[in-house]
Image 1 (cartoon, rainbow, N blue to C red):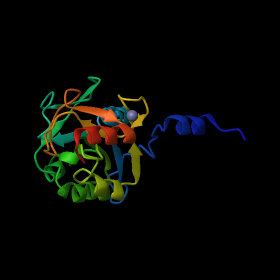
Image 2 (image 1 turned 30 degrees about the vertical axis):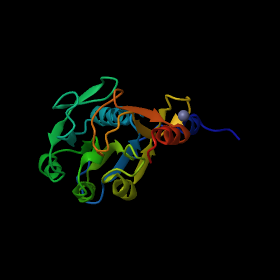
Image 3 (image 1 turned 120 degrees about the horizontal axis):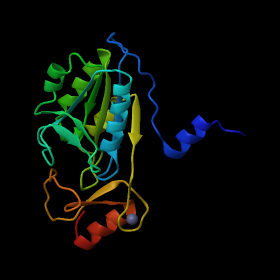
Image 4 (image 1 turned 90 degrees about the vertical axis):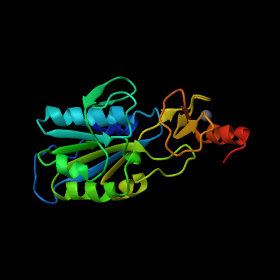
Length: 212
Ligand code: ZN
């Protein structure tokens, strides 16, 4: 069987292709995309890739992130490879509705830090004809579903799981292992606090620490 280039490319790399770039504000023509994965899995890079493509298509793009995430810069989404896009920090999910009136595509980064109201907010946006692209951690440091992410993944038309590489063994990783002893669900940090681990190494880490 001969596979087309498009098909083989998508199967090999899982590259997301937009279902459409149509500019439309008609009710019911929007949709929701979720990009989820562990720390260092490239979620934000994938969000930026999609948003840049939407900009090339001359669509109005707005990007929001929770005000809590001030690791790098208050107004820019900055991913781990320093590839940045300007964004607006908001404290409540409802604020996204206020600020996104004129846009075609709404990007939301670090969605796991928002409250459950985000689910209704993104539904409203999509129902009003907007394309919504959400990036967030699917699990916390204990391997438990994080914030509104499970609900967002359920209502989205498209869900993409991106994976990191386990720093311990080199396998595909989808857990965020916390190196410090803090038990708070929210502990901002990067390589100083977290590392990507596969299922086996994630379990091993907690077994040796006497946890989970
Ligand atoms: Zn591993």
